[in-house]
Image (cartoon, rainbow, N blue to C red; front, top):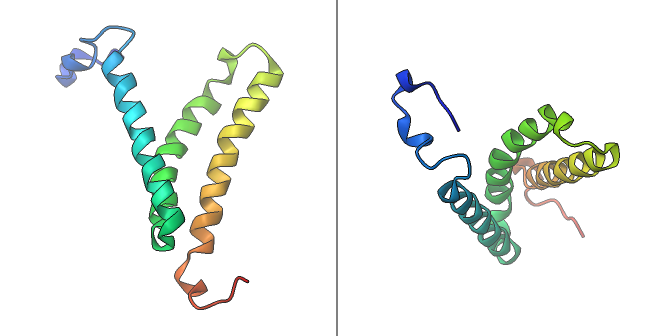
Amino acid sequence: MDLPPELGWAWVSVDGPYNEHLIRDVGRLNLALGVLGLLALWQPGLAAPFALASLAYQLPHNAYHLAHLELIASPLERFAQSAGLLFNVLAALIVVFWCRPFNKGVSRG
């Protein structure tokens, strides 16, 4: 990732075009979200915080991919990628809506 040197961020491009450190950091982020998601299965009070954390990660990620669809040659692959990413956002939004405070005490059975 190249950023203007006048911003003082020379450390960002030090690792070169394949940034193993960044790849590992993103992997750990996904692992942390997965752990929180599993905990939310046993502790329903964690469902909304998990969904919000997931959205904080997914929305900018989706914005990037949707803005760069031209990098994928196949229309089917563009659709599959977009549908998969948007499904995750929709699922998180459903969880956030389902856990809203006004739903407290409402039977869902």
